[in-house]
Amino acid sequence: MHSKPAVPDPLQQSVNVFLQTLHHLSPHTVSAYRRDLHCLCEYCHGHDISDWTQLDARRLQEFVAWRHRRGISGRSLQRNLSAVRAFYRYLIDQGVTRANPARGLKTPKSPRRLPTLLDVDQSARLLDIDEDDTLSVRDRAMMELMYSSGLRLSELTGLNLADIDLADRVVSVTGKGRKTRTVPMGRMACSILRYWLERRRDMAQPDEAALFISRRGSRLSTRSVQQRFQRWAVRQGIDLHLHPHMLRHSFASHILESSGDLRAVQELLGHADISTTQIYTHLDFQHLARVYDETHPRARRKK
Image (cartoon, rainbow, N blue to C red):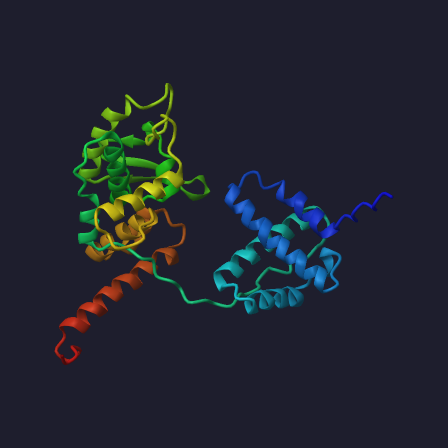
Protein backbone atom coordinates (compact mmCIF):
# COMPACT_ATOMS: atom_id res chain seq x y z
CA MET A 1 0.00 0.00 0.00
CA HIS A 2 1.48 3.32 -1.11
CA SER A 3 1.64 6.15 1.42
CA LYS A 4 0.16 9.47 0.41
CA PRO A 5 2.69 12.10 -0.67
CA ALA A 6 3.30 14.87 1.85
CA VAL A 7 1.17 17.96 1.30
CA PRO A 8 3.43 20.84 0.24
CA ASP A 9 3.71 23.63 2.80
CA PRO A 10 2.97 26.89 0.92
CA LEU A 11 4.62 29.03 3.62
CA GLN A 12 7.87 27.08 3.52
CA GLN A 13 7.76 26.82 -0.28
CA SER A 14 7.73 30.59 -0.70
CA VAL A 15 10.55 30.89 1.85
CA ASN A 16 12.63 28.35 -0.11
CA VAL A 17 12.14 30.27 -3.36
CA PHE A 18 13.12 33.52 -1.59
CA LEU A 19 16.31 31.94 -0.20
CA GLN A 20 17.35 30.93 -3.72
CA THR A 21 17.41 34.63 -4.68
CA LEU A 22 20.02 35.48 -2.03
CA HIS A 23 23.07 34.39 -4.01
CA HIS A 24 24.57 37.87 -3.49
CA LEU A 25 24.76 37.30 0.29
CA SER A 26 27.30 35.21 2.19
CA PRO A 27 26.44 31.56 2.97
CA HIS A 28 26.49 32.45 6.68
CA THR A 29 23.82 35.15 6.19
CA VAL A 30 21.65 32.89 4.03
CA SER A 31 21.88 30.15 6.67
CA ALA A 32 20.80 32.62 9.38
CA TYR A 33 17.85 33.80 7.22
CA ARG A 34 16.84 30.16 6.69
CA ARG A 35 16.77 29.45 10.44
CA ASP A 36 14.90 32.66 11.26
CA LEU A 37 12.22 32.17 8.61
CA HIS A 38 11.83 28.50 9.53
CA CYS A 39 11.03 29.63 13.11
CA LEU A 40 8.46 32.04 11.71
CA CYS A 41 6.86 29.24 9.67
CA GLU A 42 6.68 27.12 12.82
CA TYR A 43 4.94 29.93 14.67
CA CYS A 44 2.47 30.46 11.84
CA HIS A 45 1.60 26.75 11.72
CA GLY A 46 0.82 26.84 15.44
CA HIS A 47 -1.38 29.92 15.14
CA ASP A 48 -3.54 29.01 12.15
CA ILE A 49 -1.72 31.32 9.74
CA SER A 50 -1.69 29.61 6.36
CA ASP A 51 -0.99 32.60 4.11
CA TRP A 52 1.65 35.31 4.37
CA THR A 53 -0.98 38.03 3.91
CA GLN A 54 -2.50 36.97 7.26
CA LEU A 55 0.61 37.95 9.21
CA ASP A 56 0.12 41.56 10.33
CA ALA A 57 2.21 43.77 12.63
CA ARG A 58 0.29 42.73 15.76
CA ARG A 59 0.75 39.01 15.15
CA LEU A 60 4.39 39.51 14.21
CA GLN A 61 4.92 41.39 17.47
CA GLU A 62 3.41 38.39 19.24
CA PHE A 63 5.92 36.19 17.41
CA VAL A 64 8.77 38.39 18.66
CA ALA A 65 7.41 38.22 22.24
CA TRP A 66 7.07 34.43 21.92
CA ARG A 67 10.70 34.13 20.87
CA HIS A 68 11.82 36.48 23.63
CA ARG A 69 10.04 34.38 26.27
CA ARG A 70 11.99 31.36 25.01
CA GLY A 71 15.24 33.13 25.88
CA ILE A 72 16.18 34.61 22.50
CA SER A 73 18.25 37.77 22.95
CA GLY A 74 17.28 41.18 21.62
CA ARG A 75 20.18 41.08 19.19
CA SER A 76 19.03 37.77 17.71
CA LEU A 77 15.48 39.07 17.49
CA GLN A 78 16.73 42.09 15.56
CA ARG A 79 18.32 39.68 13.09
CA ASN A 80 15.01 37.73 12.97
CA LEU A 81 13.15 40.89 11.98
CA SER A 82 15.82 41.81 9.44
CA ALA A 83 15.18 38.46 7.72
CA VAL A 84 11.40 38.99 7.86
CA ARG A 85 11.70 42.51 6.39
CA ALA A 86 13.82 41.21 3.51
CA PHE A 87 11.39 38.35 2.91
CA TYR A 88 8.38 40.66 2.80
CA ARG A 89 10.16 43.05 0.45
CA TYR A 90 10.51 40.06 -1.85
CA LEU A 91 6.81 39.16 -1.42
CA ILE A 92 5.82 42.74 -2.24
CA ASP A 93 8.01 42.68 -5.37
CA GLN A 94 6.30 39.43 -6.38
CA GLY A 95 2.85 40.96 -5.90
CA VAL A 96 1.95 38.48 -3.14
CA THR A 97 1.22 41.19 -0.57
CA ARG A 98 1.24 44.97 -0.33
CA ALA A 99 2.32 45.50 3.27
CA ASN A 100 5.48 44.72 5.21
CA PRO A 101 4.42 43.90 8.80
CA ALA A 102 8.02 44.05 10.06
CA ARG A 103 8.53 47.69 9.09
CA GLY A 104 9.03 49.86 12.16
CA LEU A 105 8.69 46.93 14.57
CA LYS A 106 10.87 47.16 17.69
CA THR A 107 12.57 44.34 19.56
CA PRO A 108 13.34 44.11 23.29
CA LYS A 109 16.76 45.58 24.06
CA SER A 110 19.35 43.31 25.59
CA PRO A 111 22.38 44.56 27.51
CA ARG A 112 25.32 45.26 25.24
CA ARG A 113 28.21 42.93 25.91
CA LEU A 114 31.60 44.58 25.93
CA PRO A 115 34.22 42.67 23.95
CA THR A 116 37.11 40.98 25.72
CA LEU A 117 40.49 42.33 24.72
CA LEU A 118 44.19 42.14 25.48
CA ASP A 119 45.92 44.92 27.35
CA VAL A 120 49.10 46.40 25.87
CA ASP A 121 51.39 44.10 27.88
CA GLN A 122 49.44 40.98 26.89
CA SER A 123 49.55 42.03 23.24
CA ALA A 124 53.31 42.48 23.40
CA ARG A 125 53.75 39.08 25.10
CA LEU A 126 51.60 37.34 22.48
CA LEU A 127 53.62 38.81 19.63
CA ASP A 128 57.02 38.17 21.23
CA ILE A 129 57.61 34.93 19.28
CA ASP A 130 61.20 33.63 19.05
CA GLU A 131 60.55 30.58 16.86
CA ASP A 132 61.94 30.92 13.34
CA ASP A 133 60.23 28.03 11.53
CA THR A 134 58.06 28.95 8.54
CA LEU A 135 54.68 28.43 10.21
CA SER A 136 55.71 30.48 13.25
CA VAL A 137 56.84 33.32 10.97
CA ARG A 138 53.51 33.13 9.12
CA ASP A 139 51.47 33.13 12.35
CA ARG A 140 53.36 36.07 13.80
CA ALA A 141 52.87 37.98 10.53
CA MET A 142 49.11 37.35 10.73
CA MET A 143 48.86 38.43 14.36
CA GLU A 144 51.04 41.51 13.85
CA LEU A 145 48.91 42.54 10.87
CA MET A 146 45.59 42.03 12.68
CA TYR A 147 46.75 44.00 15.71
CA SER A 148 48.50 46.63 13.59
CA SER A 149 45.58 47.33 11.24
CA GLY A 150 42.44 46.15 13.05
CA LEU A 151 41.40 43.57 10.45
CA ARG A 152 38.48 41.18 10.71
CA LEU A 153 39.34 37.50 10.44
CA SER A 154 37.61 37.18 7.06
CA GLU A 155 39.51 40.25 5.82
CA LEU A 156 42.81 38.71 6.91
CA THR A 157 42.24 35.37 5.17
CA GLY A 158 40.88 37.15 2.09
CA LEU A 159 44.05 39.19 1.54
CA ASN A 160 46.01 38.70 -1.66
CA LEU A 161 49.64 39.56 -2.38
CA ALA A 162 48.53 42.56 -4.43
CA ASP A 163 46.68 44.02 -1.42
CA ILE A 164 49.78 44.94 0.59
CA ASP A 165 52.12 47.83 -0.17
CA LEU A 166 55.17 47.51 2.06
CA ALA A 167 56.80 50.62 0.61
CA ASP A 168 53.92 52.87 1.65
CA ARG A 169 53.04 50.64 4.65
CA VAL A 170 49.35 50.27 3.75
CA VAL A 171 47.00 47.35 3.13
CA SER A 172 43.89 47.38 0.93
CA VAL A 173 41.07 45.54 2.70
CA THR A 174 37.76 44.21 1.37
CA GLY A 175 35.27 44.26 4.23
CA LYS A 176 31.57 43.75 4.77
CA GLY A 177 29.35 44.52 1.80
CA ARG A 178 32.42 44.20 -0.48
CA LYS A 179 33.49 47.69 0.60
CA THR A 180 37.19 48.39 0.34
CA ARG A 181 39.29 50.58 2.60
CA THR A 182 42.99 51.33 2.86
CA VAL A 183 44.54 51.18 6.32
CA PRO A 184 48.11 51.74 7.54
CA MET A 185 50.40 48.95 8.72
CA GLY A 186 52.78 49.27 11.63
CA ARG A 187 56.55 49.08 11.33
CA MET A 188 56.73 45.69 13.06
CA ALA A 189 53.97 44.27 10.84
CA CYS A 190 55.81 45.36 7.70
CA SER A 191 59.08 43.90 8.95
CA ILE A 192 57.68 40.44 9.70
CA LEU A 193 55.61 40.48 6.48
CA ARG A 194 58.79 40.96 4.44
CA TYR A 195 60.28 37.96 6.21
CA TRP A 196 57.12 35.92 5.63
CA LEU A 197 57.09 36.72 1.90
CA GLU A 198 60.58 35.24 1.59
CA ARG A 199 59.43 32.02 3.29
CA ARG A 200 56.13 31.94 1.39
CA ARG A 201 57.87 31.43 -1.98
CA ASP A 202 58.87 27.88 -1.05
CA MET A 203 55.36 26.93 0.14
CA ALA A 204 52.95 28.49 -2.33
CA GLN A 205 51.30 26.58 -5.15
CA PRO A 206 51.84 28.04 -8.63
CA ASP A 207 49.64 31.11 -9.28
CA GLU A 208 48.33 31.17 -5.66
CA ALA A 209 47.33 34.78 -4.98
CA ALA A 210 46.59 34.47 -1.24
CA LEU A 211 48.92 36.31 1.13
CA PHE A 212 48.58 33.70 3.88
CA ILE A 213 48.73 30.05 2.88
CA SER A 214 48.59 26.63 4.52
CA ARG A 215 51.18 23.85 4.48
CA ARG A 216 49.59 22.68 1.21
CA GLY A 217 50.32 26.03 -0.40
CA SER A 218 46.69 27.17 -0.76
CA ARG A 219 44.72 29.93 0.97
CA LEU A 220 44.51 29.50 4.73
CA SER A 221 41.03 28.91 6.18
CA THR A 222 39.52 31.01 8.98
CA ARG A 223 39.21 27.87 11.13
CA SER A 224 42.94 27.18 10.82
CA VAL A 225 43.74 30.75 11.88
CA GLN A 226 41.49 30.41 14.94
CA GLN A 227 43.24 27.21 15.99
CA ARG A 228 46.73 28.62 15.46
CA PHE A 229 46.01 31.81 17.42
CA GLN A 230 44.63 29.89 20.38
CA ARG A 231 47.68 27.61 20.34
CA TRP A 232 49.96 30.65 20.49
CA ALA A 233 47.98 32.16 23.36
CA VAL A 234 48.64 29.03 25.41
CA ARG A 235 52.33 28.91 24.44
CA GLN A 236 52.84 32.62 25.24
CA GLY A 237 51.13 32.36 28.62
CA ILE A 238 48.02 34.40 27.79
CA ASP A 239 45.35 33.31 30.27
CA LEU A 240 42.42 34.00 27.93
CA HIS A 241 40.55 32.08 25.26
CA LEU A 242 42.08 34.02 22.40
CA HIS A 243 40.01 34.39 19.26
CA PRO A 244 41.31 36.42 16.30
CA HIS A 245 38.69 39.17 16.68
CA MET A 246 40.20 39.94 20.10
CA LEU A 247 43.19 41.47 18.31
CA ARG A 248 40.84 43.75 16.36
CA HIS A 249 39.12 44.80 19.61
CA SER A 250 42.50 45.42 21.23
CA PHE A 251 43.67 47.50 18.26
CA ALA A 252 40.56 49.70 18.42
CA SER A 253 40.66 50.20 22.18
CA HIS A 254 44.39 50.97 22.30
CA ILE A 255 44.14 53.48 19.42
CA LEU A 256 41.15 55.17 21.06
CA GLU A 257 42.85 55.35 24.46
CA SER A 258 45.84 57.09 22.88
CA SER A 259 44.07 59.38 20.42
CA GLY A 260 40.49 59.88 21.62
CA ASP A 261 39.54 60.16 17.93
CA LEU A 262 36.40 58.03 17.52
CA ARG A 263 35.89 58.98 13.85
CA ALA A 264 39.40 57.85 12.95
CA VAL A 265 38.86 54.51 14.68
CA GLN A 266 35.56 54.13 12.80
CA GLU A 267 37.34 54.62 9.47
CA LEU A 268 40.16 52.26 10.39
CA LEU A 269 37.74 49.50 11.43
CA GLY A 270 35.48 50.00 8.39
CA HIS A 271 32.31 50.51 10.48
CA ALA A 272 29.41 51.90 8.46
CA ASP A 273 27.79 53.37 11.59
CA ILE A 274 29.72 55.17 14.31
CA SER A 275 27.36 53.71 16.93
CA THR A 276 29.13 50.37 16.33
CA THR A 277 32.46 52.00 17.12
CA GLN A 278 31.14 53.70 20.25
CA ILE A 279 31.32 50.44 22.19
CA TYR A 280 35.06 51.14 22.52
CA THR A 281 34.32 54.38 24.39
CA HIS A 282 32.61 52.20 27.02
CA LEU A 283 35.77 50.09 27.24
CA ASP A 284 37.86 53.24 27.62
CA PHE A 285 35.53 54.49 30.39
CA GLN A 286 35.89 51.16 32.18
CA HIS A 287 39.65 51.70 32.17
CA LEU A 288 39.25 55.25 33.52
CA ALA A 289 36.83 54.10 36.20
CA ARG A 290 39.26 51.39 37.30
CA VAL A 291 42.15 53.87 37.51
CA TYR A 292 39.94 56.26 39.50
CA ASP A 293 38.86 53.55 41.93
CA GLU A 294 42.44 52.44 42.47
CA THR A 295 44.06 55.87 42.85
CA HIS A 296 41.62 58.52 44.12
CA PRO A 297 41.90 59.00 47.91
CA ARG A 298 38.13 59.11 48.30
CA ALA A 299 37.57 56.06 46.10
CA ARG A 300 40.17 53.64 47.46
CA ARG A 301 38.85 51.02 49.82
CA LYS A 302 40.47 50.60 53.20
CA LYS A 303 42.62 47.49 53.41
